[in-house]
Amino acid sequence: QVQLAESGGGLVQAGGSLRLSCAASGLGSGRTFSDAALGWFRQAPGKEREFVAAVSRGGEIYYLDSVKGRFTISRDNAKNTVSLQMNSLKPDDTAVYYCGKTRRTAFFVPLTYVMDQNSYELWGQGTRVTVSS
Image 1 (cartoon, rainbow, N blue to C red):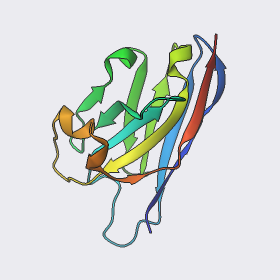
Image 2 (image 1 turned 45 degrees about the vertical axis):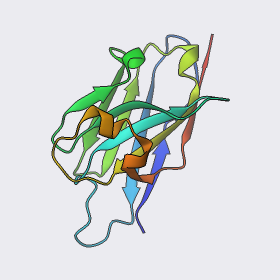
Image 3 (image 1 turned 90 degrees about the vertical axis):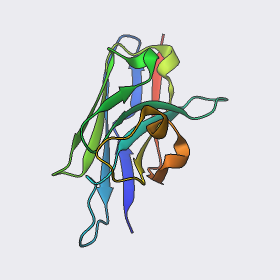
Image 4 (image 1 turned 180 degrees about the vertical axis):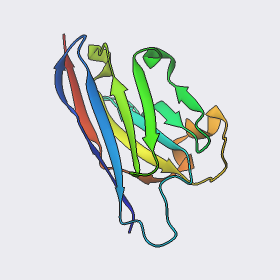
């Protein structure tokens, strides 16, 4: 059974940086982490889960407007990982961060697709990020 596991969360002061990683395990014969878009979402206390960033199979990258220029998503298909480098963190970035894998295997998918939680077939358990002011 394929599972995703996030790591790298923690407590950081405003202006600091964290790097989140998401690794896939349980990939059987013929399965790969590289055959779909991968994304990061976050859920702040009392709020709904929201899209943060995604990278398509073809390498196209999408970001939530509020994280553009601060966050960088990257994928390593050989290692079956997707990462989120977060710089210049703000208290508003405090949330549990989740990585996910979409269903579609197209090389390029529209922004509306990767922003929709229903597009994802697999999620990690989340890693908590707390940014203090």
